[in-house]
Length: 515
Ligand code: SAH
Ligand code: SF4
Ligand code: F3S
Image (cartoon, rainbow, N blue to C red; front, top):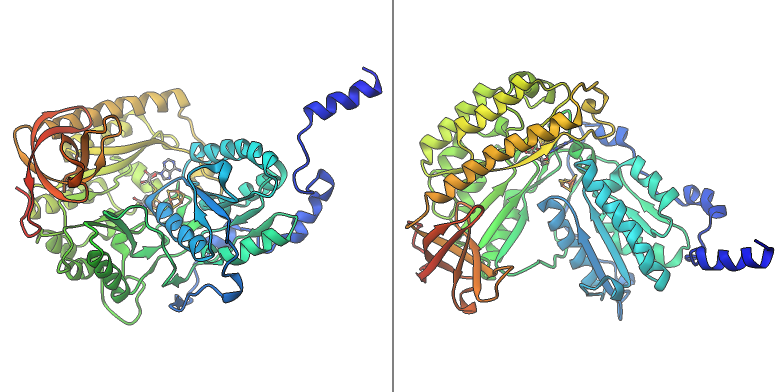
């Protein structure tokens, strides 16, 4: 190949320069770093009191920054992340940006990421590679990475070296700083990184652009202090800190007044709610007892940790009304040895005892769970104990996962003698049991009348409506679109593998309780 050909081939093969970032500028990125993450710092739990910021407002200087611009947010991970995206969408809109669901139209693209398992992270890296195409077409497009992955040093380093078309990286404690970060990114030609590895504060009055007008998420607490040995969340989300009850009650009241039909209270470990208050004795049971009195048809919460699930909470939940008969109660394993090395701080016996108390108080309760298979050195017998426990409790559904080592966590340092093939095979066997129990739970609804909160039309057919029962079962039935947003009675005609099918009976009066 002669020089001319070589230059010509390079012109074809080489990517167009993006902004002015080149390999040569690389060292500057580190100088430009405003704050980089540290898993070690994120792990610290000091005695500092939680700071409450009630006066959040977007400074005047940023207003109008988004005039004529559009934003796009892609969210990965849990409902906490979904809700954070609603907050970021709210901030964008206060800045004057408009939402778009077409990436190619967006002036600012955010990936709100999840770090819980390796495959969650790989999806994000795949998407980042894909975004390069858009950045080449529109070099002015700002690309940002936020959420739990941003809190990891290794991820930020990888973005710095491999994904130089990213303009902003910011962490879970920096969401309210979005206006500053955007401004910095517009002015700077280099990557803007702002990730605080701190225990965390509570910020009130952040704007929110909620997805939909039927169901709403409400944070009741942030962070996690449980430090289960496999889990990255305590490092990415900071320490457990609760919102004040009056703020939560006020938010739920406002949502009820706006016609919302269902509230999902959010926290990584909602049963620890209130533990951090130094000035009042107030726990999840007390909060639920207050929320019960608000005129809104349904209130759910997620996620429960078996250790902090107290008797008062059970007693309050048993009062029913708008407190639904569904509890998601992750058990993770049925083996005491595995629970111990997971540092879950409860035993199989304690878990079964808790289930017994819940079932006694709420006889028609639907219990669902999360399970990890293939924990380091898990034996076949230990795995069998999980299957046995599943059968004994009779969970109605479960999220099941193969253990994924997370850098910086104690479990990631353990030697593991269980081959991946064995883990996959165990997952399959567990899933077969999960499916058997889910199908049996659905079968019981045949010929019964249930209450369904109609959320929209079915994904497959426009004339079929879809919604969930109080016990979180998906129901499809034919009916007019006017029913969307209402709670209706449906007679179940058939149970499918993952959902129920039925016939519309009537619209429910709000005050009535499910049959
Ligand atoms: N706070 C919740 C769980 C949040 S993470 C709780 O404690 O119940 C959701 C689920 O992901 C967990 O329940 C667990 O089953 C799973 N999970 C967490 N870390 C994991 C890891 N390293 N590998 C595989 N699954 C994991
Ligand atoms: Fe992770 Fe355990 Fe906290 Fe749940 S309770 S978020 S599994 S550390
Ligand atoms: Fe994932 Fe973070 Fe939620 S790691 S599961 S998005 S708290």
